[in-house]
Length: 95
Image 1 (tube, helix red, strand yellow):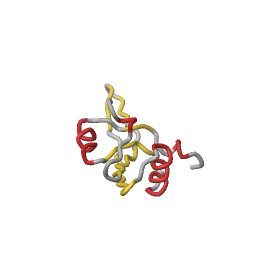
Image 2 (cartoon, helix red, strand yellow):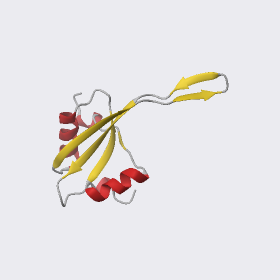
Image 3 (cartoon, rainbow, N blue to C red):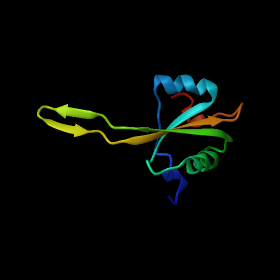
Image 4 (cartoon, helix red, strand yellow):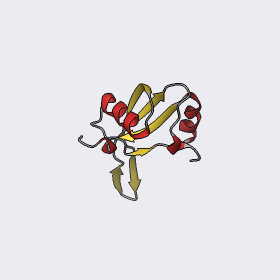
């Protein structure tokens, strides 16, 4: 991946991730091929913060039915990024 902005697809905002923000942990959806080093570099350069740890989880897509036909949602990877104490990502504030 050449561009660091391609590493972070979108932020993942749910009730659980909002609660994790109190512990300085922020969650992003990232490409399946992205590794922890790329994710750390992208967050540090884009948001100008210090990353302490990166946790990744591969989420398998659910199987869904529409009448007779059966389809599958795509798989994705989510990354939980823990920031240094006292640092925040302003992008998430007020979401």
